[in-house]
Length: 330
Image 1: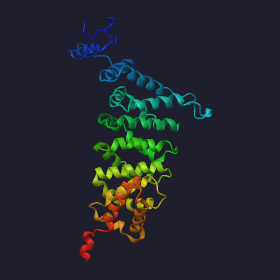
Image 2 (image 1 turned 30 degrees about the vertical axis):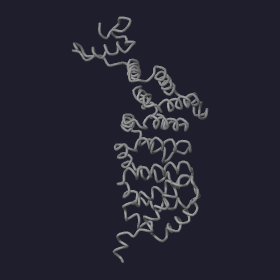
Image 3 (image 1 turned 180 degrees about the horizontal axis):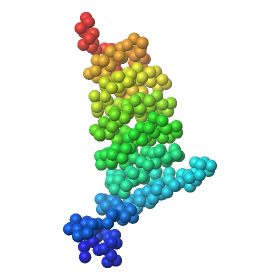
């Protein structure tokens, strides 16, 4: 009989793909009586069966399921504030394993089918920072290069939670992971970028550029540069936010890995946008002097070749090519 499990009971979950297909066919046939709501245990089984049928190895699907089971349980000591932060080691290991597994597109697809995004998004507000950071890493690993996961995460409200982690999380481990996940949700993702803009993401990104953490500044500058290359319409709102003097001020800090992307972002802002060129020429910024000094510093150093090219390009755009306004003045 179609839809009957291995034990002969029509209510027993099928144990193989053939049984799953039979159950699906039976479910689409004429219904004499209203169907009972599917129980939670049956939903979990069905998600796992679909995930396995979609291509993941049984072992990896089972590993992800075990990790999600761990994350669904409270950390030891979590319910008793007087015990301190509790023992999060098991939960941290589960998040690390999920992030590694979700580097595979097949596994990331299976992870979504298992309801994994719903579980890890709930941890972005967890009291203990390692779990917030680990959850953000999993979201990013799952969403990168997988439009279906990006859309699902956005629909579940991932972006507001991640922006809050980037903007205000007091633990230095969390914002870099949050920024990674945000990048995976907004680059080459029209819906994600629209949400990002409407939620004040440009302002939050500007705040990340001011971080005392050099790696976070570098990642924020990289994302800003990437967004400007892909979405030139962002020039105007960034200009209104005072991004030009902010970026120039960052160039005056001790040289680090962020400077290449800061110069790249300034080049993207200035290209075909006279308003930014005029800002760059404001005497108080002393940008031309700074760029000429930086060019001397970088010349002959192969590891900074791309940064040198941005420096020369910005000099050409702003100080060696007359703008339409300056031509008219003459």
